[in-house]
Length: 35
Image (tube, rainbow, N blue to C red; front, side, top):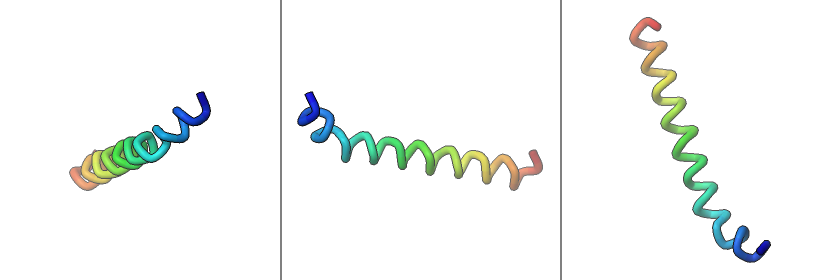
């Protein structure tokens, strides 16, 4: 089981980073447009 999780870790990390980047862009745009 742990080998399976270790194999998925890079994919999950990339997915998490993409989500954080999208959230930051969304929040920045929202604040830039005046809330």
